[in-house]
Amino acid sequence: MNKEGTFLLKNFIELVIAAIGIVFIIILGVSLFNFYVNQDTKNAQKSLDSLMGKINALEDGENNTFLIRGVKGWSIVSYSKAQFPKPDKCFFESCVCICRSYSLEDKLDTFTGKGQADLCQNEGFCRKLDKDEVKVKQARICKSTTRVAGPYAGQVDTTCHYKGLEDKLNTIKVSKEDTSLLLEFL
Image 1: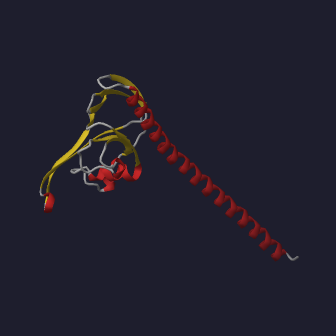
Image 2: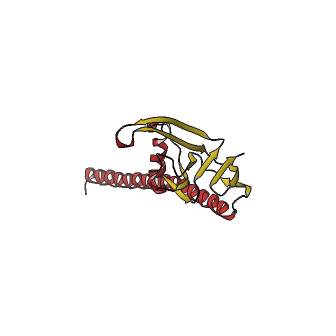
Image 3: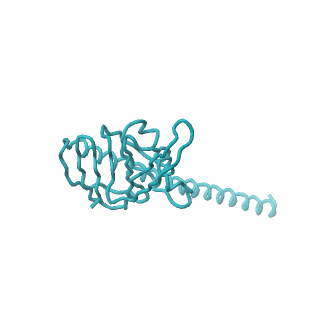
């Protein structure tokens, strides 16, 4: 083989090795990113499952204080039975959800709570409760009165209660009554 052919072969092999290295680095980066994102989702679901276990362990008329692990960028959200709007996951029941916290970039309707309900439906986990009223105390409240036209004319009171979580242990007091449940962050 002549010198020019050897030179081209050598450069070609170096380019192939470089391309394989770049592909490997990209695959590794995507894998690490997916692991991190999925880890937050799994931790959020575990936090809700833990909270529900503690709620279910209480009898009506009891209250207790618990620690739950928070997941940064997620919120605990409550929806009462007669509340509108709420996630379809809750149907006609009260529920507690853990959902990705919304940000200004989400361009959501923070006055009616529809945006938070959509996030809980699409990017959250909800658990139904056999209570008429469920509230998160010491939480942010989005509330408004919306005028509705047509056969359901009148005013609809839309309220959602949510508390953004931090990546630490959160102290929460759970008060369980016959028809209500109160989650109070301390």
